[in-house]
Amino acid sequence: MGEGLDETAVIQLDGLTVKLGKREILHDLRGTLRGRTIGLLGPNGAGKSTMIQTLLGFCPPSAGTATIFGHDIRKQARELRSMVGYMPENDAFIADMTAVGFVRLMGELSGLPPGAALERAHEVLFYVGLGEARYRTLGTYSLGMKQLAKLAQAMVHGPRLVILDEPTNGLDPPARQRMIRLIREMRDTGKVNLVVCSHLLRDVEETCEEVLILKAGRIVHYSNLEEERKANKRFVELETVGDDTGFAEALTNKGCECVRAGAGRLKMVVPLEFEMREIYVLAAERDLQLRRLNYRRDTLEDIFLKAMEQPQAAGAK
Amino acid sequence: MAVYKRTYVGYEGALTPSWSRFLVLPRYSYARLAQSRIVTTFRNVALIYPLALIVFVYLCNNLSVLTDLGIPAGQFLKVDSSTFLYYCWIQGGFAYILTAFVGPSLVSPDLVNNALPLYLCRPFSRAEYVLGKMSVLIGLLSAITWIPGLIVFAVQASLAGWDWTMSNWWIAGALFVGLMIWVIVLSLIALAISAWVKWKIAAGALLLGIFIAGAGFGTAINQIVRTDYGTLINLPSVMYTIWSHLFGQIPDNGISVEAAWGCIFVVSAACLWLLTRKVRAFEVVK
Image 1: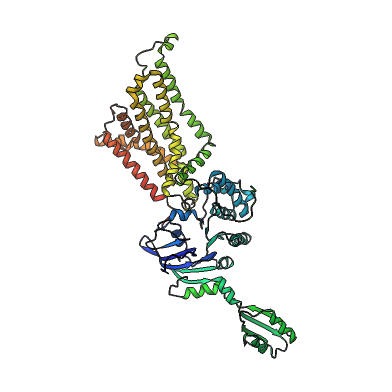
Image 2: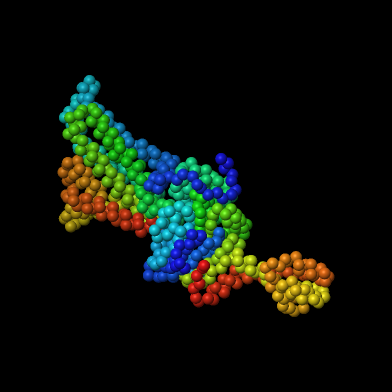
Protein backbone atom coordinates (compact mmCIF):
# COMPACT_ATOMS: atom_id res chain seq x y z
CA MET A 1 0.00 0.00 0.00
CA GLY A 2 1.12 3.50 0.64
CA GLU A 3 -0.17 4.53 -2.75
CA GLY A 4 -2.60 7.13 -1.38
CA LEU A 5 -6.24 7.23 -0.43
CA ASP A 6 -8.45 4.64 -2.09
CA GLU A 7 -12.02 5.92 -2.45
CA THR A 8 -13.51 2.45 -2.75
CA ALA A 9 -11.73 1.00 0.28
CA VAL A 10 -13.67 0.07 3.37
CA ILE A 11 -10.52 -0.27 5.45
CA GLN A 12 -7.10 0.87 4.37
CA LEU A 13 -4.12 -0.03 6.52
CA ASP A 14 -1.08 2.13 6.03
CA GLY A 15 1.86 0.81 8.01
CA LEU A 16 -0.30 0.42 11.10
CA THR A 17 1.83 -0.40 14.11
CA VAL A 18 0.53 -0.63 17.67
CA LYS A 19 2.45 -0.97 20.89
CA LEU A 20 0.87 -1.78 24.24
CA GLY A 21 3.39 -0.92 26.89
CA LYS A 22 6.75 -1.88 25.44
CA ARG A 23 5.37 -4.78 23.43
CA GLU A 24 4.62 -4.34 19.75
CA ILE A 25 1.29 -6.03 19.07
CA LEU A 26 0.70 -5.07 15.43
CA HIS A 27 3.63 -4.70 13.06
CA ASP A 28 3.43 -2.47 10.01
CA LEU A 29 0.08 -3.69 8.68
CA ARG A 30 -0.59 -2.68 5.09
CA GLY A 31 -3.52 -3.49 2.89
CA THR A 32 -6.79 -2.41 1.36
CA LEU A 33 -10.03 -4.20 2.14
CA ARG A 34 -13.07 -3.60 -0.03
CA GLY A 35 -15.36 -6.54 0.69
CA ARG A 36 -18.95 -6.28 1.87
CA THR A 37 -17.99 -8.67 4.69
CA ILE A 38 -14.41 -8.89 5.80
CA GLY A 39 -13.22 -11.76 7.93
CA LEU A 40 -10.43 -11.27 10.40
CA LEU A 41 -8.81 -14.55 11.28
CA GLY A 42 -5.90 -15.61 13.37
CA PRO A 43 -4.92 -17.75 16.31
CA ASN A 44 -5.25 -16.45 19.85
CA GLY A 45 -2.91 -13.53 20.44
CA ALA A 46 -2.55 -12.76 16.73
CA GLY A 47 -3.70 -9.17 17.27
CA LYS A 48 -7.25 -9.35 15.89
CA SER A 49 -8.90 -7.62 18.84
CA THR A 50 -6.09 -5.08 19.07
CA MET A 51 -6.60 -4.28 15.40
CA ILE A 52 -10.31 -3.72 15.99
CA GLN A 53 -9.65 -1.60 19.06
CA THR A 54 -7.16 0.45 17.08
CA LEU A 55 -9.64 0.98 14.27
CA LEU A 56 -12.15 2.17 16.88
CA GLY A 57 -9.60 4.56 18.35
CA PHE A 58 -9.23 2.76 21.68
CA CYS A 59 -5.51 2.09 21.16
CA PRO A 60 -3.45 4.83 19.57
CA PRO A 61 -1.18 3.60 16.75
CA SER A 62 2.51 4.01 17.53
CA ALA A 63 3.29 4.35 13.81
CA GLY A 64 1.37 4.44 10.55
CA THR A 65 -2.36 4.84 10.37
CA ALA A 66 -5.54 3.38 8.93
CA THR A 67 -8.64 4.76 7.31
CA ILE A 68 -12.23 3.60 7.35
CA PHE A 69 -14.26 4.90 4.40
CA GLY A 70 -11.46 7.42 3.91
CA HIS A 71 -11.60 8.73 7.51
CA ASP A 72 -8.27 8.66 9.28
CA ILE A 73 -8.44 6.86 12.63
CA ARG A 74 -5.94 9.31 14.10
CA LYS A 75 -7.48 12.57 12.94
CA GLN A 76 -11.19 11.84 12.48
CA ALA A 77 -11.93 9.39 15.26
CA ARG A 78 -15.21 11.04 16.25
CA GLU A 79 -16.68 11.15 12.72
CA LEU A 80 -15.50 7.62 12.21
CA ARG A 81 -17.20 6.31 15.33
CA SER A 82 -20.53 7.72 14.22
CA MET A 83 -20.25 5.51 11.12
CA VAL A 84 -19.24 2.37 12.95
CA GLY A 85 -21.13 -0.09 15.13
CA TYR A 86 -19.20 -2.38 17.43
CA MET A 87 -20.20 -5.65 19.00
CA PRO A 88 -17.51 -6.56 21.55
CA GLU A 89 -16.38 -10.09 22.24
CA ASN A 90 -17.06 -10.21 25.97
CA ASP A 91 -20.29 -9.65 27.84
CA ALA A 92 -21.02 -5.93 27.61
CA PHE A 93 -24.34 -4.54 28.80
CA ILE A 94 -26.00 -2.70 31.67
CA ALA A 95 -27.61 -5.37 33.82
CA ASP A 96 -30.47 -3.41 35.35
CA MET A 97 -31.72 -1.92 32.09
CA THR A 98 -34.35 -3.37 29.81
CA ALA A 99 -33.15 -4.28 26.34
CA VAL A 100 -35.18 -1.51 24.78
CA GLY A 101 -33.86 1.05 27.28
CA PHE A 102 -30.29 -0.11 26.74
CA VAL A 103 -30.45 -0.02 22.95
CA ARG A 104 -32.22 3.34 23.07
CA LEU A 105 -29.49 4.76 25.34
CA MET A 106 -26.83 3.55 22.92
CA GLY A 107 -28.75 5.12 20.04
CA GLU A 108 -28.99 8.45 21.83
CA LEU A 109 -25.27 8.40 22.62
CA SER A 110 -24.68 7.94 18.90
CA GLY A 111 -26.60 11.13 18.27
CA LEU A 112 -30.14 9.95 17.58
CA PRO A 113 -32.87 12.15 19.06
CA PRO A 114 -34.78 10.39 21.90
CA GLY A 115 -37.88 9.65 19.81
CA ALA A 116 -35.95 8.24 16.86
CA ALA A 117 -33.70 6.24 19.18
CA LEU A 118 -36.72 4.63 20.85
CA GLU A 119 -38.31 3.80 17.51
CA ARG A 120 -35.12 2.29 16.14
CA ALA A 121 -34.49 0.38 19.38
CA HIS A 122 -37.82 -1.40 18.90
CA GLU A 123 -37.06 -2.02 15.22
CA VAL A 124 -33.60 -3.50 15.71
CA LEU A 125 -34.70 -5.64 18.62
CA PHE A 126 -37.43 -7.12 16.45
CA TYR A 127 -34.92 -7.50 13.64
CA VAL A 128 -32.48 -9.53 15.75
CA GLY A 129 -35.31 -11.60 17.19
CA LEU A 130 -35.63 -10.12 20.67
CA GLY A 131 -38.93 -8.37 20.01
CA GLU A 132 -40.89 -10.38 22.55
CA ALA A 133 -38.18 -10.06 25.22
CA ARG A 134 -37.38 -6.39 24.75
CA TYR A 135 -38.90 -5.25 28.05
CA ARG A 136 -36.92 -7.77 30.09
CA THR A 137 -33.84 -6.58 31.93
CA LEU A 138 -30.58 -7.63 30.29
CA GLY A 139 -29.41 -9.33 33.47
CA THR A 140 -32.08 -11.99 32.95
CA TYR A 141 -31.04 -12.78 29.36
CA SER A 142 -29.36 -16.00 28.29
CA LEU A 143 -25.93 -15.83 26.66
CA GLY A 144 -27.43 -16.08 23.18
CA MET A 145 -29.89 -13.29 23.91
CA LYS A 146 -27.10 -11.09 25.25
CA GLN A 147 -25.19 -11.63 22.01
CA LEU A 148 -28.26 -10.55 20.05
CA ALA A 149 -28.72 -7.50 22.30
CA LYS A 150 -25.09 -6.56 21.63
CA LEU A 151 -25.76 -6.89 17.91
CA ALA A 152 -28.86 -4.70 18.26
CA GLN A 153 -26.93 -1.92 20.01
CA ALA A 154 -24.25 -2.11 17.30
CA MET A 155 -26.75 -1.37 14.55
CA VAL A 156 -29.27 0.92 16.27
CA HIS A 157 -27.74 4.06 14.78
CA GLY A 158 -27.62 2.61 11.27
CA PRO A 159 -23.84 2.48 10.87
CA ARG A 160 -22.09 1.95 7.55
CA LEU A 161 -19.68 -0.52 9.09
CA VAL A 162 -20.46 -3.04 11.82
CA ILE A 163 -17.53 -4.69 13.56
CA LEU A 164 -18.41 -8.03 15.13
CA ASP A 165 -15.83 -9.46 17.51
CA GLU A 166 -16.43 -13.20 17.91
CA PRO A 167 -20.19 -12.90 17.28
CA THR A 168 -20.90 -16.61 17.81
CA ASN A 169 -18.86 -16.96 20.98
CA GLY A 170 -20.53 -19.34 23.41
CA LEU A 171 -23.63 -19.85 21.29
CA ASP A 172 -25.35 -23.21 20.93
CA PRO A 173 -25.83 -24.49 17.33
CA PRO A 174 -29.33 -23.03 16.77
CA ALA A 175 -28.28 -19.66 18.21
CA ARG A 176 -25.13 -19.75 16.08
CA GLN A 177 -27.15 -20.45 12.97
CA ARG A 178 -29.42 -17.56 13.82
CA MET A 179 -26.47 -15.21 14.25
CA ILE A 180 -24.91 -16.37 10.95
CA ARG A 181 -28.26 -15.88 9.20
CA LEU A 182 -28.53 -12.35 10.61
CA ILE A 183 -25.02 -11.48 9.46
CA ARG A 184 -25.79 -12.78 5.98
CA GLU A 185 -29.07 -10.89 5.87
CA MET A 186 -27.34 -7.68 6.84
CA ARG A 187 -24.67 -8.29 4.22
CA ASP A 188 -27.25 -9.03 1.54
CA THR A 189 -29.12 -5.76 2.13
CA GLY A 190 -26.08 -4.04 0.63
CA LYS A 191 -26.48 -1.14 3.08
CA VAL A 192 -23.79 -2.09 5.53
CA ASN A 193 -20.26 -3.47 5.52
CA LEU A 194 -19.25 -5.97 8.14
CA VAL A 195 -16.00 -6.99 9.76
CA VAL A 196 -16.29 -10.40 11.37
CA CYS A 197 -13.48 -11.24 13.73
CA SER A 198 -13.51 -14.89 14.70
CA HIS A 199 -11.31 -17.86 15.36
CA LEU A 200 -14.09 -20.12 14.03
CA LEU A 201 -13.20 -20.67 10.39
CA ARG A 202 -16.65 -21.93 9.53
CA ASP A 203 -18.31 -18.71 10.68
CA VAL A 204 -15.99 -16.64 8.52
CA GLU A 205 -16.35 -18.98 5.58
CA GLU A 206 -20.12 -18.81 5.76
CA THR A 207 -20.35 -15.05 5.96
CA CYS A 208 -17.30 -13.35 4.47
CA GLU A 209 -16.17 -12.31 1.04
CA GLU A 210 -12.64 -11.32 2.03
CA VAL A 211 -10.37 -12.77 4.68
CA LEU A 212 -7.36 -11.27 6.35
CA ILE A 213 -5.29 -13.74 8.34
CA LEU A 214 -3.10 -12.40 11.12
CA LYS A 215 -0.30 -14.18 12.88
CA ALA A 216 1.82 -12.65 15.64
CA GLY A 217 0.67 -9.16 14.70
CA ARG A 218 1.42 -9.48 10.99
CA ILE A 219 -0.76 -10.11 7.96
CA VAL A 220 0.22 -13.55 6.72
CA HIS A 221 -2.47 -14.04 4.12
CA TYR A 222 -5.16 -12.15 2.30
CA SER A 223 -7.81 -14.07 0.45
CA ASN A 224 -10.79 -13.02 -1.59
CA LEU A 225 -13.10 -15.90 -0.87
CA GLU A 226 -15.57 -14.91 -3.58
CA GLU A 227 -12.84 -15.10 -6.21
CA GLU A 228 -11.57 -18.38 -4.79
CA ARG A 229 -15.05 -19.86 -4.79
CA LYS A 230 -15.47 -18.87 -8.44
CA ALA A 231 -12.03 -20.27 -9.31
CA ASN A 232 -12.71 -23.50 -7.44
CA LYS A 233 -15.77 -24.13 -9.60
CA ARG A 234 -13.43 -24.77 -12.49
CA PHE A 235 -11.90 -27.83 -10.80
CA VAL A 236 -14.20 -30.83 -11.08
CA GLU A 237 -13.83 -34.41 -9.89
CA LEU A 238 -15.97 -37.09 -11.58
CA GLU A 239 -16.67 -40.71 -10.68
CA THR A 240 -18.42 -42.85 -13.29
CA VAL A 241 -19.74 -46.41 -13.54
CA GLY A 242 -19.83 -48.15 -16.93
CA ASP A 243 -17.83 -48.04 -20.12
CA ASP A 244 -16.25 -44.63 -20.21
CA THR A 245 -14.36 -45.13 -23.45
CA GLY A 246 -14.13 -41.86 -25.30
CA PHE A 247 -15.75 -39.89 -22.46
CA ALA A 248 -12.53 -38.14 -21.48
CA GLU A 249 -11.76 -37.40 -25.13
CA ALA A 250 -15.25 -35.96 -25.65
CA LEU A 251 -14.75 -33.67 -22.67
CA THR A 252 -11.32 -32.68 -23.98
CA ASN A 253 -12.94 -31.80 -27.30
CA LYS A 254 -15.26 -29.47 -25.41
CA GLY A 255 -12.22 -27.64 -24.05
CA CYS A 256 -11.74 -29.41 -20.70
CA GLU A 257 -8.38 -30.61 -19.47
CA CYS A 258 -8.88 -34.17 -18.17
CA VAL A 259 -6.63 -36.45 -16.15
CA ARG A 260 -7.54 -40.03 -15.26
CA ALA A 261 -7.26 -40.70 -11.54
CA GLY A 262 -8.01 -44.41 -11.53
CA ALA A 263 -10.77 -46.57 -12.98
CA GLY A 264 -13.87 -44.50 -13.68
CA ARG A 265 -12.38 -41.42 -12.02
CA LEU A 266 -11.57 -38.19 -13.77
CA LYS A 267 -10.12 -34.91 -12.60
CA MET A 268 -10.63 -32.00 -14.94
CA VAL A 269 -10.31 -28.28 -15.30
CA VAL A 270 -13.29 -26.81 -17.15
CA PRO A 271 -13.08 -23.61 -19.20
CA LEU A 272 -15.00 -20.56 -18.01
CA GLU A 273 -17.60 -20.75 -20.79
CA PHE A 274 -18.20 -24.48 -20.25
CA GLU A 275 -21.78 -25.45 -19.30
CA MET A 276 -21.83 -28.16 -16.63
CA ARG A 277 -24.93 -29.57 -18.33
CA GLU A 278 -22.62 -30.81 -21.13
CA ILE A 279 -21.12 -33.39 -18.77
CA TYR A 280 -24.53 -34.95 -18.21
CA VAL A 281 -25.31 -34.87 -21.95
CA LEU A 282 -22.01 -36.60 -22.86
CA ALA A 283 -22.53 -39.21 -20.13
CA ALA A 284 -26.10 -39.89 -21.29
CA GLU A 285 -24.93 -40.34 -24.88
CA ARG A 286 -22.59 -43.12 -23.65
CA ASP A 287 -25.09 -44.62 -21.18
CA LEU A 288 -22.62 -43.79 -18.45
CA GLN A 289 -23.69 -43.42 -14.81
CA LEU A 290 -22.33 -40.41 -12.96
CA ARG A 291 -21.88 -41.47 -9.36
CA ARG A 292 -20.16 -38.37 -8.09
CA LEU A 293 -19.45 -34.83 -9.31
CA ASN A 294 -17.47 -32.63 -6.97
CA TYR A 295 -16.07 -29.18 -7.26
CA ARG A 296 -12.68 -29.04 -5.73
CA ARG A 297 -12.99 -27.11 -2.54
CA ASP A 298 -10.00 -25.39 -1.09
CA THR A 299 -11.55 -24.87 2.33
CA LEU A 300 -10.77 -21.88 4.47
CA GLU A 301 -9.16 -24.33 6.83
CA ASP A 302 -6.67 -25.25 4.08
CA ILE A 303 -6.02 -21.58 3.43
CA PHE A 304 -5.64 -20.86 7.12
CA LEU A 305 -3.29 -23.76 7.76
CA LYS A 306 -1.17 -22.77 4.76
CA ALA A 307 -1.08 -19.19 6.04
CA MET A 308 0.03 -20.33 9.48
CA GLU A 309 3.04 -21.99 7.88
CA GLN A 310 4.08 -18.78 6.13
CA PRO A 311 6.75 -16.75 7.87
CA GLN A 312 6.45 -13.72 5.59
CA ALA A 313 3.89 -10.97 5.83
CA ALA A 314 1.51 -10.59 2.91
CA GLY A 315 -0.36 -7.38 2.16
CA ALA A 316 -3.98 -7.26 1.11
CA LYS A 317 -4.62 -5.54 -2.18
CA MET B 1 -44.43 3.87 11.38
CA ALA B 2 -44.51 0.12 11.74
CA VAL B 3 -42.35 -1.23 14.51
CA TYR B 4 -41.92 -4.63 12.94
CA LYS B 5 -39.30 -4.23 10.24
CA ARG B 6 -37.32 -7.32 9.43
CA THR B 7 -34.58 -5.73 7.43
CA TYR B 8 -31.53 -3.63 8.11
CA VAL B 9 -32.14 0.04 7.53
CA GLY B 10 -29.64 2.83 7.91
CA TYR B 11 -30.45 6.05 9.74
CA GLU B 12 -30.53 9.25 7.76
CA GLY B 13 -32.50 11.50 10.12
CA ALA B 14 -31.34 14.47 12.16
CA LEU B 15 -28.69 14.08 14.84
CA THR B 16 -28.46 15.82 18.20
CA PRO B 17 -25.60 18.34 18.65
CA SER B 18 -22.48 16.53 19.81
CA TRP B 19 -21.94 18.93 22.76
CA SER B 20 -25.27 17.89 24.29
CA ARG B 21 -24.73 14.12 24.26
CA PHE B 22 -23.26 13.95 27.76
CA LEU B 23 -26.67 15.07 29.03
CA VAL B 24 -28.13 11.73 27.92
CA LEU B 25 -26.46 10.00 30.88
CA PRO B 26 -28.02 12.13 33.65
CA ARG B 27 -31.43 11.84 32.02
CA TYR B 28 -31.32 8.06 32.19
CA SER B 29 -29.82 8.11 35.68
CA TYR B 30 -32.52 10.44 37.02
CA ALA B 31 -35.20 8.15 35.59
CA ARG B 32 -33.60 5.25 37.49
CA LEU B 33 -33.09 7.24 40.70
CA ALA B 34 -36.69 8.42 40.66
CA GLN B 35 -37.68 4.78 41.19
CA SER B 36 -35.63 4.60 44.38
CA ARG B 37 -37.73 5.33 47.47
CA ILE B 38 -34.68 5.88 49.68
CA VAL B 39 -33.23 8.53 47.39
CA THR B 40 -36.56 10.27 46.87
CA THR B 41 -37.34 10.28 50.60
CA PHE B 42 -33.89 11.50 51.55
CA ARG B 43 -33.98 14.23 48.90
CA ASN B 44 -37.27 15.45 50.34
CA VAL B 45 -35.97 15.30 53.92
CA ALA B 46 -32.96 17.36 52.81
CA LEU B 47 -35.33 20.16 51.80
CA ILE B 48 -36.89 20.50 55.26
CA TYR B 49 -34.13 22.73 56.58
CA PRO B 50 -34.29 25.25 53.68
CA LEU B 51 -38.07 25.38 54.16
CA ALA B 52 -37.61 25.99 57.88
CA LEU B 53 -35.06 28.67 57.06
CA ILE B 54 -37.56 30.41 54.79
CA VAL B 55 -40.01 30.49 57.72
CA PHE B 56 -37.21 31.83 59.94
CA VAL B 57 -36.37 34.51 57.37
CA TYR B 58 -40.04 35.49 57.19
CA LEU B 59 -40.28 35.76 60.96
CA CYS B 60 -37.08 37.79 61.19
CA ASN B 61 -38.52 40.28 58.77
CA ASN B 62 -41.94 40.28 60.41
CA LEU B 63 -41.20 40.56 64.11
CA SER B 64 -44.68 41.97 64.64
CA VAL B 65 -46.09 38.49 63.97
CA LEU B 66 -44.12 37.15 66.94
CA THR B 67 -45.17 40.11 69.09
CA ASP B 68 -48.82 39.50 68.15
CA LEU B 69 -48.37 35.87 69.15
CA GLY B 70 -46.92 36.99 72.46
CA ILE B 71 -43.47 35.58 71.72
CA PRO B 72 -40.58 37.88 72.74
CA ALA B 73 -38.44 38.62 69.68
CA GLY B 74 -34.86 39.09 70.74
CA GLN B 75 -31.82 40.42 68.98
CA PHE B 76 -30.78 36.89 68.00
CA LEU B 77 -33.31 36.88 65.21
CA LYS B 78 -31.34 38.26 62.31
CA VAL B 79 -30.30 37.00 58.88
CA ASP B 80 -26.67 37.57 57.94
CA SER B 81 -23.66 35.72 56.50
CA SER B 82 -23.41 33.40 59.53
CA THR B 83 -26.96 32.20 58.84
CA PHE B 84 -25.88 31.13 55.35
CA LEU B 85 -22.60 29.65 56.62
CA TYR B 86 -24.63 27.46 58.94
CA TYR B 87 -26.90 26.63 55.99
CA CYS B 88 -23.84 25.46 54.02
CA TRP B 89 -22.74 23.25 56.89
CA ILE B 90 -26.16 21.59 57.26
CA GLN B 91 -26.95 21.16 53.57
CA GLY B 92 -23.35 20.15 52.80
CA GLY B 93 -23.87 17.28 55.25
CA PHE B 94 -27.06 16.22 53.51
CA ALA B 95 -25.26 16.38 50.17
CA TYR B 96 -22.54 14.12 51.51
CA ILE B 97 -25.03 11.46 52.68
CA LEU B 98 -26.98 11.62 49.41
CA THR B 99 -23.70 11.16 47.53
CA ALA B 100 -23.03 7.99 49.53
CA PHE B 101 -26.44 6.66 48.39
CA VAL B 102 -26.18 7.61 44.73
CA GLY B 103 -22.47 7.83 43.85
CA PRO B 104 -21.46 4.14 44.04
CA SER B 105 -24.03 3.12 41.42
CA LEU B 106 -22.78 5.52 38.77
CA VAL B 107 -19.60 4.04 37.27
CA SER B 108 -19.18 0.62 38.87
CA PRO B 109 -22.10 -1.08 37.03
CA ASP B 110 -20.56 -0.04 33.71
CA LEU B 111 -17.19 -1.46 34.73
CA VAL B 112 -18.64 -4.66 36.20
CA ASN B 113 -20.63 -5.33 33.04
CA ASN B 114 -17.84 -4.20 30.71
CA ALA B 115 -20.12 -1.54 29.22
CA LEU B 116 -17.44 1.11 28.70
CA PRO B 117 -16.45 -0.10 25.19
CA LEU B 118 -20.10 0.33 24.20
CA TYR B 119 -20.08 3.96 25.32
CA LEU B 120 -16.67 4.79 23.93
CA CYS B 121 -17.07 3.13 20.52
CA ARG B 122 -19.59 5.88 19.76
CA PRO B 123 -18.93 9.56 19.10
CA PHE B 124 -18.66 9.95 22.86
CA SER B 125 -15.37 10.59 24.64
CA ARG B 126 -14.08 9.59 28.05
CA ALA B 127 -14.31 13.21 29.16
CA GLU B 128 -17.96 13.33 28.11
CA TYR B 129 -18.60 10.09 29.98
CA VAL B 130 -17.11 11.48 33.19
CA LEU B 131 -18.89 14.80 32.68
CA GLY B 132 -22.19 12.99 32.08
CA LYS B 133 -21.82 10.88 35.21
CA MET B 134 -20.73 13.93 37.23
CA SER B 135 -23.77 15.85 36.02
CA VAL B 136 -25.98 13.26 37.71
CA LEU B 137 -24.55 14.16 41.10
CA ILE B 138 -24.10 17.84 40.34
CA GLY B 139 -27.79 18.17 39.39
CA LEU B 140 -29.02 16.10 42.31
CA LEU B 141 -26.85 17.80 44.93
CA SER B 142 -27.44 21.27 43.53
CA ALA B 143 -31.16 20.71 44.04
CA ILE B 144 -30.62 20.35 47.80
CA THR B 145 -27.75 22.80 48.30
CA TRP B 146 -27.19 26.05 46.43
CA ILE B 147 -30.51 26.20 44.57
CA PRO B 148 -32.68 26.23 47.73
CA GLY B 149 -29.97 28.41 49.32
CA LEU B 150 -30.40 31.03 46.62
CA ILE B 151 -34.18 30.79 47.03
CA VAL B 152 -33.76 31.51 50.75
CA PHE B 153 -31.51 34.45 49.85
CA ALA B 154 -34.08 35.71 47.35
CA VAL B 155 -36.83 35.51 49.99
CA GLN B 156 -34.64 37.43 52.44
CA ALA B 157 -33.79 40.00 49.76
CA SER B 158 -37.43 40.51 48.85
CA LEU B 159 -38.46 40.92 52.50
CA ALA B 160 -35.47 42.96 53.71
CA GLY B 161 -35.54 45.42 50.86
CA TRP B 162 -33.15 46.97 48.36
CA ASP B 163 -30.61 48.32 50.87
CA TRP B 164 -30.02 44.94 52.50
CA THR B 165 -29.73 43.27 49.07
CA MET B 166 -27.19 45.79 47.80
CA SER B 167 -24.97 45.46 50.86
CA ASN B 168 -25.23 41.64 51.05
CA TRP B 169 -25.35 40.48 47.42
CA TRP B 170 -21.94 38.86 47.85
CA ILE B 171 -23.56 36.31 50.18
CA ALA B 172 -25.40 34.87 47.16
CA GLY B 173 -22.08 34.55 45.30
CA ALA B 174 -20.39 32.93 48.29
CA LEU B 175 -23.30 30.54 48.68
CA PHE B 176 -23.16 29.48 45.06
CA VAL B 177 -19.36 29.19 44.84
CA GLY B 178 -18.93 27.49 48.23
CA LEU B 179 -21.61 24.87 47.73
CA MET B 180 -20.74 24.27 44.07
CA ILE B 181 -17.14 23.49 45.04
CA TRP B 182 -18.37 21.04 47.67
CA VAL B 183 -20.74 19.43 45.13
CA ILE B 184 -17.94 19.04 42.57
CA VAL B 185 -15.50 17.61 45.12
CA LEU B 186 -18.11 15.15 46.39
CA SER B 187 -18.96 14.14 42.80
CA LEU B 188 -15.32 13.53 41.91
CA ILE B 189 -14.64 11.49 45.05
CA ALA B 190 -17.82 9.44 44.52
CA LEU B 191 -16.98 8.74 40.87
CA ALA B 192 -13.39 7.79 41.66
CA ILE B 193 -14.51 5.39 44.39
CA SER B 194 -17.24 4.01 42.14
CA ALA B 195 -14.66 3.38 39.41
CA TRP B 196 -12.25 1.54 41.67
CA VAL B 197 -14.59 -0.27 44.07
CA LYS B 198 -16.98 -2.32 41.98
CA TRP B 199 -19.16 -3.57 44.85
CA LYS B 200 -21.71 -0.84 45.46
CA ILE B 201 -22.16 -1.43 49.19
CA ALA B 202 -18.40 -1.40 49.74
CA ALA B 203 -18.10 1.78 47.66
CA GLY B 204 -20.81 3.52 49.72
CA ALA B 205 -19.16 2.39 52.97
CA LEU B 206 -15.77 3.59 51.74
CA LEU B 207 -17.21 6.98 50.85
CA LEU B 208 -18.65 7.35 54.34
CA GLY B 209 -15.46 5.93 55.86
CA ILE B 210 -13.16 8.36 54.06
CA PHE B 211 -14.83 11.31 55.74
CA ILE B 212 -15.30 9.73 59.15
CA ALA B 213 -11.84 8.15 59.22
CA GLY B 214 -10.36 11.37 57.81
CA ALA B 215 -11.81 13.35 60.70
CA GLY B 216 -10.55 10.77 63.20
CA PHE B 217 -7.05 10.51 61.77
CA GLY B 218 -6.85 14.28 61.39
CA THR B 219 -7.61 14.78 65.08
CA ALA B 220 -5.15 12.05 66.03
CA ILE B 221 -2.38 13.62 63.94
CA ASN B 222 -3.10 17.02 65.45
CA GLN B 223 -2.89 15.56 68.97
CA ILE B 224 0.24 13.48 68.41
CA VAL B 225 2.31 15.87 66.29
CA ARG B 226 0.86 18.97 67.97
CA THR B 227 -0.04 20.64 64.70
CA ASP B 228 -3.18 21.82 62.92
CA TYR B 229 -2.29 20.37 59.54
CA GLY B 230 -3.84 17.01 60.40
CA THR B 231 -7.14 18.80 59.76
CA LEU B 232 -6.22 18.78 56.05
CA ILE B 233 -7.31 15.15 55.80
CA ASN B 234 -10.66 16.06 57.34
CA LEU B 235 -12.44 17.26 54.19
CA PRO B 236 -15.58 18.68 55.84
CA SER B 237 -13.34 20.76 58.07
CA VAL B 238 -11.28 21.89 55.08
CA MET B 239 -14.49 22.87 53.32
CA TYR B 240 -15.67 24.73 56.43
CA THR B 241 -12.49 26.82 56.26
CA ILE B 242 -13.25 27.77 52.67
CA TRP B 243 -16.91 28.51 53.44
CA SER B 244 -15.92 30.63 56.43
CA HIS B 245 -13.52 32.58 54.25
CA LEU B 246 -16.14 33.08 51.55
CA PHE B 247 -18.71 34.28 54.13
CA GLY B 248 -16.22 36.62 55.78
CA GLN B 249 -15.94 34.62 59.00
CA ILE B 250 -12.82 33.47 60.79
CA PRO B 251 -12.50 29.68 60.90
CA ASP B 252 -11.49 28.17 64.22
CA ASN B 253 -9.86 24.96 63.02
CA GLY B 254 -6.35 26.33 62.67
CA ILE B 255 -5.67 25.77 58.94
CA SER B 256 -5.10 28.58 56.50
CA VAL B 257 -7.42 29.31 53.61
CA GLU B 258 -4.56 28.76 51.15
CA ALA B 259 -3.85 25.32 52.60
CA ALA B 260 -7.57 24.49 52.42
CA TRP B 261 -7.78 25.49 48.75
CA GLY B 262 -4.60 23.53 48.02
CA CYS B 263 -6.04 20.46 49.73
CA ILE B 264 -9.27 20.66 47.69
CA PHE B 265 -7.25 21.06 44.50
CA VAL B 266 -5.04 18.05 45.30
CA VAL B 267 -8.03 15.85 46.19
CA SER B 268 -9.84 16.83 42.96
CA ALA B 269 -6.73 16.22 40.83
CA ALA B 270 -6.16 12.83 42.49
CA CYS B 271 -9.77 11.82 41.81
CA LEU B 272 -9.47 12.85 38.15
CA TRP B 273 -6.26 10.86 37.83
CA LEU B 274 -7.95 7.80 39.36
CA LEU B 275 -10.83 8.21 36.93
CA THR B 276 -8.56 8.46 33.89
CA ARG B 277 -6.87 5.24 35.00
CA LYS B 278 -10.15 3.33 35.11
CA VAL B 279 -12.46 4.93 32.56
CA ARG B 280 -11.04 3.24 29.48
CA ALA B 281 -12.48 1.15 26.72
CA PHE B 282 -10.10 -1.69 27.50
CA GLU B 283 -7.62 -2.70 30.16
CA VAL B 284 -4.01 -3.53 29.38
CA VAL B 285 -3.06 -6.58 31.40
CA LYS B 286 0.63 -6.49 32.20
